[in-house]
Image (tube, rainbow, N blue to C red; front, top):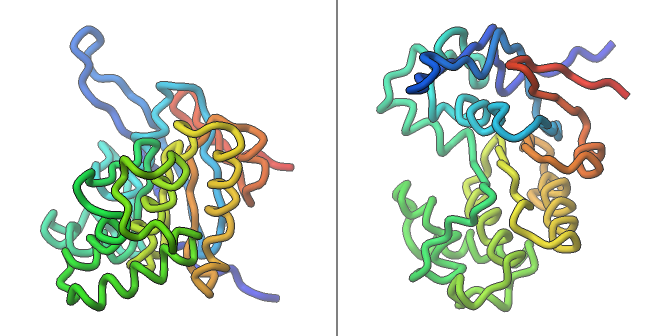
Length: 235
């Protein structure tokens, strides 16, 4: 019998609260347990304000939980100083947001190559890698275009290329289709589902925050966040 692979990310009894002026400490996550394995496609569903973005931020190591433990490939983030976490995060995890967050005065190619250049990769090598990633996403004719010259769907493809150019183990996507029309949203969602095939390997996992139940049903697993608790939906 094949043993399941070890999770690339795990939440162990994670709870999180933050201060709210009129209500004191507001708890948004309670005793959360979650494991994500290589190649999985996991949808996170829940009403607005339920804490889905906070959950992704904790998974990415951008926030430390009030209680509990977050592990990347078995390594506890609580044991890492912020300097070490900042070095490790770009190697493990990439993020895509509802807002494209492209730098307006950089071209598509320059935006996509930026993570590699910031890590010290030579500019020519970084842009060669970014060019290949953009071409795989259908943007070979848009390399020299600035964000203002691109459609919403094209901007999101550039943002995905920027996220994937360093070949992360995990992609966290926070409502990545929220600013797009339904047809373009479906295209971007299909692209996200196909990323392991595009990369030529199945290591990259996807955790997708979405309100779209129909799209979420296409994922391997669906996790609902409501009333501070995570519940996995079966079937």
